[in-house]
Image (cartoon, rainbow, N blue to C red; front, side, top):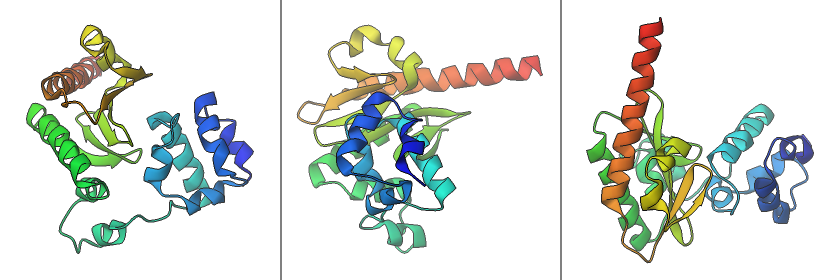
Amino acid sequence: MKIGFLLEKLSGPARRALSPLGLKTVEDLARHTKRGIMELHGIGPSAMGTIEAAMDAAGIVFKAEAGDAEAKSGRTGKGPVDAYIETFPPDVRKLLRQVRATIKDAVPDAEEKIAYGMPTFALRGNVVHFAAFKHHIGLYPLPSGMEAFKAELSRYKQGKGSMQFPLDEPMPLDLIARIAKFRAEENRAKARKKKERA
């Protein structure tokens, strides 16, 4: 499948991010790891979802990362989020574990999974995604989660539905907890309204 078919569905920043890879077909994506693509500036959850859908249609998957096979086979005794975290250096792993524990404590009834290649907490829909990059931890609470905390987030670099917490600064764990709680309650409220209309 020619890569143009996929590129037409992506935003400008996502197309520019993929351009240096010299992809000719969708199948060429199989030479790359999911984390490698996610680390490209301009590739967010929406773009990754589109990329993965195109890959599914072509019947291909990303190149395996160290630890992926063991995690999938269950030999490590760890889940997919643990496997994701283990792919990073020790200092980044520590920060990812802090963010993960903070969200778990804030929304203890949320399900933990990997979605769009990132650790995700879901409760009646996705609550928040998070991911590590070269210089920051990205948090993806959807635009509504960002709008509700606009003033507190103003000092951080942001994208549509995402924010970046620099690796060389303390993680704002209290803020992350409040954002996760807000998003969980937002999902609960939507579920209640849907139930009332039914």
